[in-house]
Image 1 (cartoon, rainbow, N blue to C red):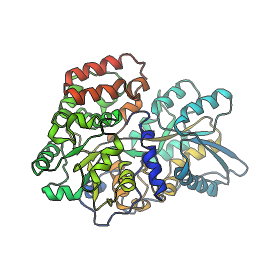
Image 2: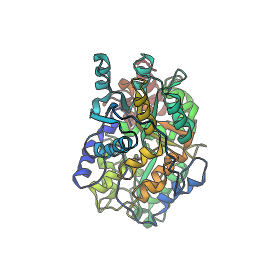
Image 3: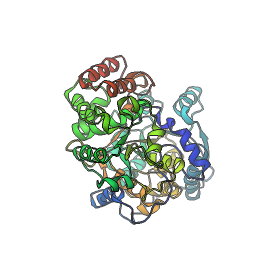
Image 4: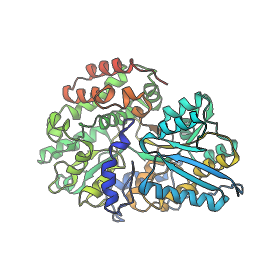
Length: 467
């Protein structure tokens, strides 16, 4: 998604909450699918045998924390409503262990702005959870936040794959660790439509295009694309690019260390054209896809009768399905990992909220250390609407089979997880409606010209200052 895209789904999440779902933000549904599931859940679940993946029982590895009686901690994050209630469970668990007093402030979309204002005014919270790695890097470079202590780093090393530590590293020092993550490499499908056409969940991009053709031949429109929201197109691109070009090239492009005219970009766009350039494979063709927003792209795939057999977006699409349709996750609706377009097959593009410290007080560092432990993640996971990158969080902590599969896929990716590229870009390029990457990819969906799109992307990227 783009920089502001997690907030783009807030309206439908609110609908889900009104329906009694324990969901919010970029999260998965707490609806309970059948235990048997279908091929969508079994694909990521089978990855549990790989190194670093959680087992069914997992590990309850606890963390030793000091007695902090009489100490107080202020925490700032974006969460409100049901998410705030769930995070309070985390705070309560910390208080029970340390006897510290913790106060929380929710700042919604303005978390970074509020944090900067408080820092400037000398009234900064002790801990903040921020969804933008670029903003964290800026704060670190300005000396406004503190490197994490050795005790925190030891807990991170015990519970996270090295890539997560690298994500929070600035100039050789670790300033943050991801607490709540989103898996944006999930591809959702209507199981009845697949069964009718006799297709199974594809594992590769070639299989995906072949399955789309089979669905089309059976009189079923294969894919619903939410092209009216430009951020969805950035997510399509990022998954294809990461699989084809690999993590190192992904990192270079994310920081504009290579131009958007690089052959690897053109290759990814050419791959996408196999779908975007074929009107028969999308609801309404190219022009129709540009009129469909994210929410509608998911909903119309699972209404009765459905308008498409499948739709791509992250784990939070599950909440759209459960709150706007009658489809049941795990039976009527399921997901498969984003089909590999290149040699990298076990990957995840995602986002999330990372914890940082504005001071190095023992109580502050203890709270961040707790957030890096399985106990903190388990306190929220049981409430639903949460995924943790912590490899020692047991799968049994999650409330349903779909969320377990999403979490397993996230952790199994290990160092092949990459943070959403457009969220790392300057907002003028990667997070602004009607301009930059969002508009350039919408123009590409319309025109189907990979070279022209790459040139437009580079022209807009060159206007910005990159980290």
